[in-house]
Amino acid sequence: MKKSRYFISAQMEDFVLYYNLVNDTLLKLPAEKNEGCIKCLENPNDRTSIYWSKLYSDKFIIEDHYDELKETQRRHWKTVNNSDELNLTVICTFGCNSDCVYCYQRNLDFECLEMSSADFVQLRTFLNGIPQKYIHINWYGGEPLLIKDKILHFCAEMDKDKKHTFSYSISTNGSIYDEKFFRMMERYGMTSVTVSVVGIGKESERLRPSNTFCADNVIRNIILMTRYTNVIVNLNLCKSNVEQIREVFEALSGYRYSSLSFTFSRIVSYDHRPCEDIVLDVDTYMKCMIELSNWALDHRFRISDMSCFQNFGVYCGAYAKYNYVIGPGLYVYQCDRSYNPKDSFARIVNGALEYNQNSTGCSEDKYCIDPFQNEECKDCKILPYCNGGCAYLRKITKDACPPEKNYLEDYLKLYYRIFYEEQ
View 1 (cartoon, one colour):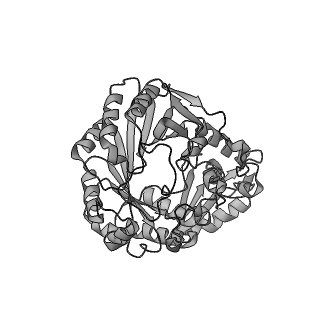
View 2 (cartoon, helix red, strand yellow; view 1 turned 180 degrees about the vertical axis):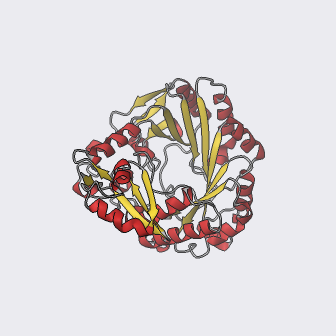
View 3 (cartoon, one colour; view 1 turned 120 degrees about the vertical axis):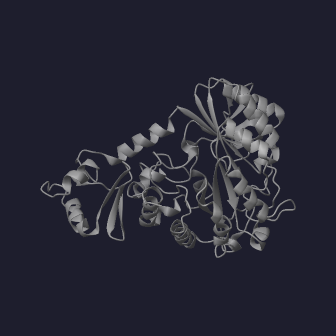
């Protein structure tokens, strides 16, 4: 017998949590019993321990021949190759009604700026013929609601397709609200809207200048959207706004029991749109995010699942075989940070995928690694979650590891609070 190499533990008040990242098993026990549990884990062959049976059944103690690395690989590739559902991120336009100082799409040359009417027709033809029954589309931009009429017409046409079941989500800056659009999208299967927010008042105007809307418009629109769907407020954090970001919670405090929830992301700087002066370093961001999450939970706000638990073996949709990013011109990508047609692996032509034979595959890219053969990755507790991290960040020579790697105990506590603590 041996103990698992991929579990973490954390103490919360008068109890201790254990979580196995390979098998997604959670164990909770009184703090006074933790010493005995630790002793049993250190002596996995001692079956006389009162803890042994539970630790064995939850795979914190495993057979000598059980290969956790192979199990992690198996689960990863099972999810990668899952063909039950097709997930699409559709970048329908690169147009936007704001000029965010940190926008990673600015100062890039795009061959196509917006999906044409013909693109929408060809996309419908393609989806009508795919074998998957379930199709989810996340409308992305730019600001996708700038072409909301085209989106709505597309969804109305797809609603006539009785062979498939469609669902939709939208990633937006929250500046546009149209009652008919959201009412009809609810009918067509809209599951959620994610609204990126940087604050309210002058800080929002500085980070997200716009001639067409202000932060007050966004807050009002968020409230209106909750009538029709789940709304996830994604708080983009940086040095400039982190001290004032609780004002967003306060502005929405009357709706904490609605379909509203919150998550966080770190503003980063890119060579084509540098903003290094406002970027929080990873450790500062993580500490602020953890503190804000706990504060929000204390005040009965809902936090969306941002944990490194129960991801079923895929860190990012870019790894999944049936997860595509489709941009204007119907070029098909694996990652929503790649917009150059030469980086596309295919294009939808006449309703079918036409593969790009000159596309650079991961196996040919010197920045790609096999995490299951890399010693540093194999020894890392977070491997069952990250599968080697972000290939895009590795390609641009940035740290590919998830920032939560060094904050697993804090994330475990948040995971428990989000899913198990009585609110």
